[in-house]
Image 1: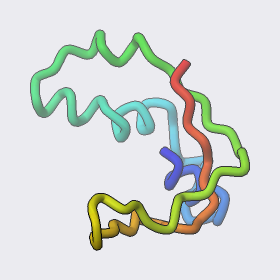
Image 2: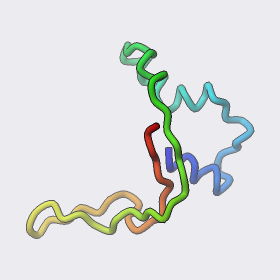
Image 3: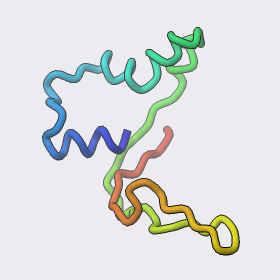
Image 4: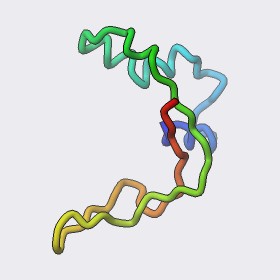
Amino acid sequence: MQALVEAFERGEVDAASVTQEVLEGFFGGYGRKFYGIEDEVASVGRIRLSRKDETICEAVRVEEGVEVRPFRSGKRVWSLEWL
């Protein structure tokens, strides 16, 4: 979700050509249909994206001597909240 919003911001996606139907399909409908999962699950949740001062951490230490660097580490991102 956050990556798509950033693509809109950068002008990489034409917002006028993206409909609610396309977004719903892309973010879950197509996958649920492919795997035969009921659509009623989709109607129970909503999200809110907001610009807060959140940054992806540079690294996560998983054990002594082992660090994982997350995708887009150090980048400022949109915050996603389930409603």
